[in-house]
Amino acid sequence: MRLSRPAAPGIVLTSALAVLIVVNLAANGVIASLGLLDAVLAIAALTGIVWWAGGTRDDVGLGAGTLRRGALWALALIGLVALVYLVGALLPFTRALFSDRRTALLTGGDVALRMSVKVPLGTVLLEEYAFRGVLYGLIRRYRDTTTAIIASSLLFGLWHVLPSLHLATQKPTLTAVFGHSTAAAVVTDIGAVLFTSAAGVLLCELRRRSGSLLPSIGLHWATNALGYLAAFALGRTG
Image (cartoon, rainbow, N blue to C red):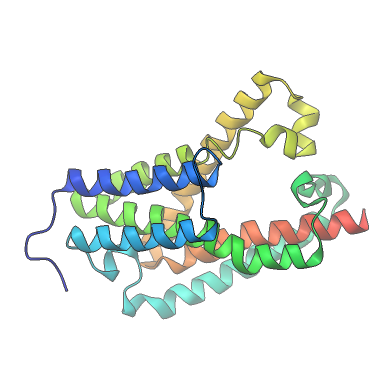
């Protein structure tokens, strides 16, 4: 049910950004975190903000008429990522790209938990719903599609500033190039922001072309979860 008098665009977007700032700070240890409950509460709050703005399921890419087409897109993209990762893991000159110190001490159960719970809920569903769902949908509602793609993608890039601060020390291939200096951290962080902003454009384009949020969810999950699986498997066989 739509509100008869929706909230003003500025208030709506400011509220959505405030929710995301709090969650980002909690996820990166700046303020207290409730773990996966942070994502659940954020999704609930963002859903309330969409309703407050007078929006519907269609605005966030979850309209009933798009679900079947979106699911087919998502399955195809998951299969494509799996194929690319398999080829990359088998080729000697790309195998090192999968090396990640974050998986070095993980057990098979840890990887399964990340793939089935932590990545889907704590990362993928929250980020896709927030950036390709709520922000993209609301900005497009207020302005136009191009503005929605640019704004939500830039914000998605900025979302990764804090989690990318130690990227150079977590990925051996990056450490070999940039080292452990402060300058290395800054360079890799800027690179991560630019890369994730570009990824945001791609994910928005999937949302635009399919009319559904499911393809970007599928691609995002496959990239992250299958990446953990590949790094773990190669770490045990390397």
